Image 1 (cartoon, helix red, strand yellow):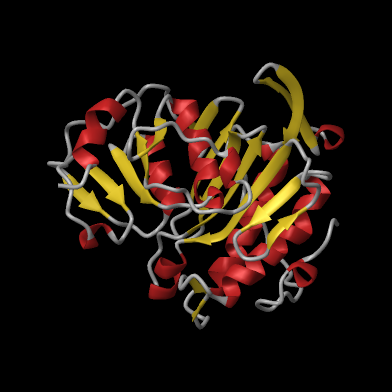
Image 2: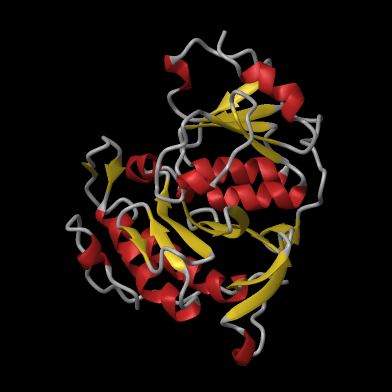
Length: 303
């Protein structure tokens, strides 16, 4: 294992925690033979590269989620230096992921919210780790938090997993295909018009000057879940705030797989490479359903 959380940070407890039993895997993501499980080779962006297989990652992410669920409503929150919330659950889950993932993806760089980077800086691929995306929701006793792991290779989001332990939802993206609970999400699908069209947004939207979107607005507390809802075709768009790469990597891969888009609120393209050190996005981000960015972006501008 290339380092450990104790060597990288003095924050929080880093005790060993045994994982609970893994839930059954979804149809379509059964593991390949043991000789093939460690890595899957794909061709992307003009060259051949190797990335961790979701068949290997998914059980570990689910185990981490069950660890978090076991601590749900049984932790005390504190404030980090940036004034965001953190709990012993965040630290325990990330510690578990950092201990397990090098076994699955040796040589791949890990970048987590709580303990920073581990592994070679020159690695082609980075696994981004948000042990509990939506810590505020977690602390409040709401079920909309998740464990999310993204795969970023050569500055592009090529895969990821977002798992919601309290609702049993699993969103994955790999090889240009996205799935929700094992079902393939069709490319190009927009939200149905039978119900109320809605967007999801960061929780500080009310502190600004408002937006022009005519439909409903919901804030569920998790950037990764918000992006998954857009990719799934439930939400028209998501206004994400100044997110970090561990919040958005898995969602960016899902959006790409279904034909959605991720841009800055100004309309500028999003380059993930400057965010690979853990920096906040310089502007608010917008995720939009397929073919809807040009229509929705003006409606999300401040009044």
